[in-house]
Length: 444
Image (cartoon, rainbow, N blue to C red; front, side, top):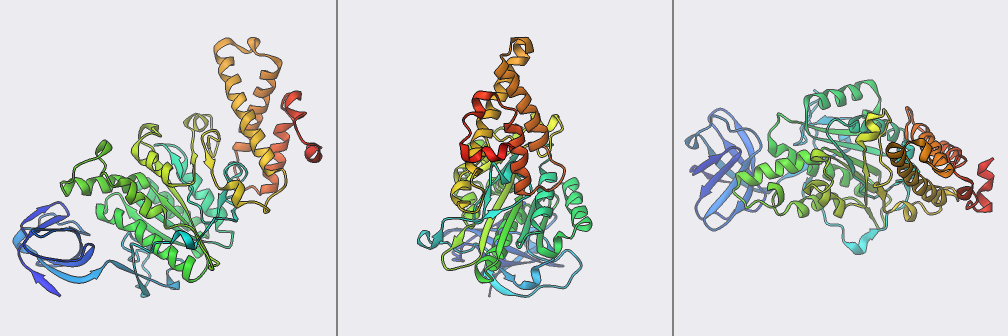
């Protein structure tokens, strides 16, 4: 343990030390103040300057009040079976009035899964949401983000997914990043009113907590997930909400460090940083467990070209996009199926679903697209200008939105198929004659 007494500069949670130090990048340090000890970490090191970040606020602290102890260790988190059913903060410390947890120390930066050891994701995770299960199927080992906007019902959707998945043989790990007060209260009430915590681990970070905690939380949550998925060989799903708060925290710290900004002020390494989180999901050859991720992000101004959703889309295997139009109409969940996509749904579900799975999905997509065109034409020219086929598409689309997309309770896959075929019956005759003979039994 090396102790150093000379802090040259303090910028928010960032401390600058000048001198010929050679600490490890990411090394844990203790910041000794007059009346308390704060943990920190080495952010950057060179021959002349070492940058540290404090995990708690340094408001009111003077340079002369602080001494630094370099531990020589990287940031680790103790993983254990005792984590199940617990609520912790972004550093992994209990906030549920339960006892401290001691476990196997793991580096929170995680392990790199070699491509040669990766298995192509396979196996359906049934969320109980039919617009996901039937049209944008979530596969074990996949990373499938939800793109939402401010004020949309994404948190309610997350709550429904959590309740539905908790009934499956799967461990849930939820990471709440930079939660606003209302979001924090909603999640707290969800835990009290349902029994999901018995099959889950919750890491919660509030907006008023130190920004550094936002950066650490997803790594602690994913380290926990890797332990249960690849060492205990369980099926684990990780929901991270809100990735936009994580990226904003990254931008804030980058600015304090004096780094050159990239697009919209975000650090140039935003892509690789997000990839270091999302790529920790998957299935490893020879292991029975799987690690699935659902990152949730709110798009600023509903802009899908914003750096956060744009880069996330490049890294992940599809996206679920929520529609403000459907939300205003009162449809829940307001999933816009046209731009939504699960790239692994057909390969990962092969042999695990009904024979009409792909046909139904393709037909619903194409028919709903034609409904949206007919709906626009009706607004422009009036219903009298529509052809007989367009009117049938309108009938199909309205039934599809209010009976298939809209749901107030968990639905089984079989129920989703039944409603889908009821909608298909409303299509024009020339669409229905395309149905293969082997699927005609579902039209009865």
